[in-house]
Length: 72
Figure 1 (cartoon, one colour):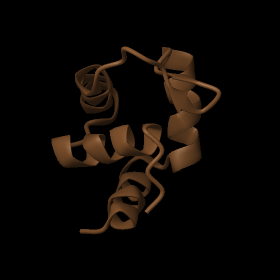
Figure 2 (figure 1 turned 45 degrees about the vertical axis):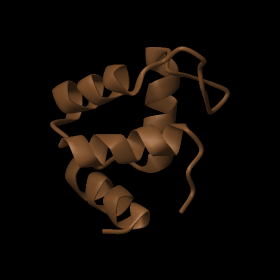
Figure 3 (figure 1 turned 120 degrees about the vertical axis):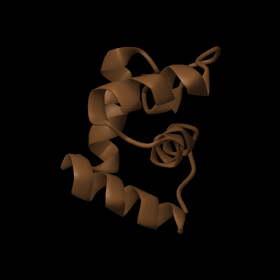
């Protein structure tokens, strides 16, 4: 599955766009001005996404990649 395919599936499941997740990530303290804060571990983000949005590991890692700046 492509990166965009993961993002599309996440949006279909949660109703939240990649931009919505970036805003939520900022509120949780993972991002500053859309950039991943230094010292934040992928596990912290994955656990949040699994707990709050019931995402699987692969889909959660796609959001981590989004937070790291991946676009495609």
